[in-house]
Image (tube, rainbow, N blue to C red; front, top):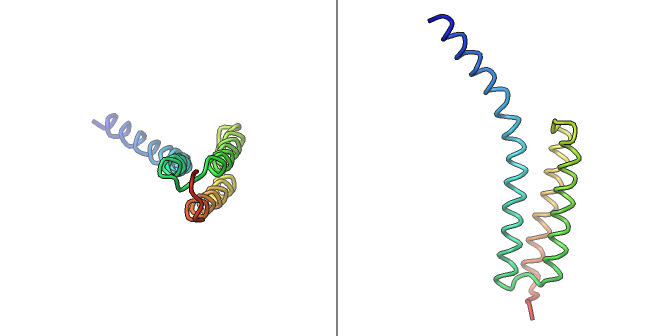
Length: 106
């Protein structure tokens, strides 16, 4: 009984440490996915021109590249995560601006 309880306690402690780390990366990935969906939706609705969409997709690709570089050592530090979130904030703003700039696809 004590052995089972100790195993459960160790497993819970391990999960408590590992899950937040994965959750932080998942947040970045989730934001990237949502922004890519917004770009696709903008093209389909005509809110984004093909040139605007190409530019926004390139910005998203740069963010993914920076994320891969940050994770190269197996860790995503708080500073790296903050930098990625700043880049995602800018990309989010750029998507909003382009979708609402009164240009339409021809």
